Length: 330
Image (cartoon, rainbow, N blue to C red; front, side, top):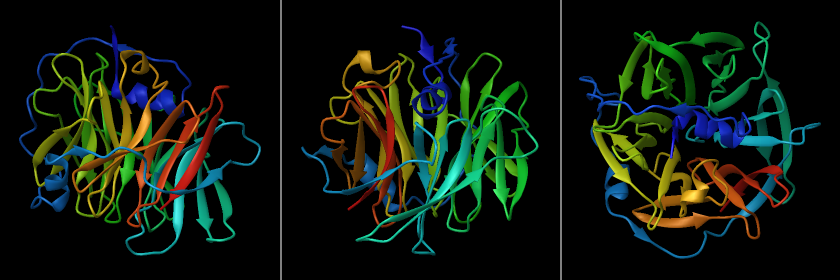
């Protein structure tokens, strides 16, 4: 089976329909000498290295999200909530990006703000937002990244030789950005942007790597292909990589991590699910225990972001193929 880059898998889920770009196999990638997030290992590393499976799903209250006037709303990242009680969710709807402020308990209200760089044309999407309102997103067929801070858009493009596209996925409260970039052979690699310094990284022995989430400690989660072309989730904490898989899954991707080290993502138990995620379900990995996050009766559920109170942002696909976003509050 031909592989697709991790970038195009994620974009296929929420942004580009089902248009996939197959990638060729790459030689084993040497690990970057300077690892990103070089800090003492956090509790998240221990949590990911001791994994068990608990049947059933966590108990959540679901708030459905729908950008006004759009038939498809894709909720991506959520702010950590480390310095504020407000909840902001980043995403895409139609051809543009947005940030939604969600408030209230008994009566939930949503306030949507369209976020699009006015100097560029074509589809855009917001991937991540932090507590300060800084956001990261992409445009130009999602090959060009940006950061918006204080209302100003700044281009994000890795300076590495052979880079053909940059896509930032998440930003923490220190302004540290994590994402992926792809080369001219459609091989994918991770990157961090800390201050003005870009650092590339690849999972040791992996053929494609992307970083999708980052918490306040700089712990990074993402996914990679192994030498056999099998997808796994990973945690990068204190310079140490930890690989993990949902029990019984043939495909695992980690999308988000909070400051407690709780991780959310997507898994597939059949090979038929892998090309576009149909039939895949979300998961929570907390204190070494996996649980499934699934909307009852729906075909596919994606758990994409998680804040410090355990609220999860994501979306699901129903039997008619329609996409509906949600905020799941424990």
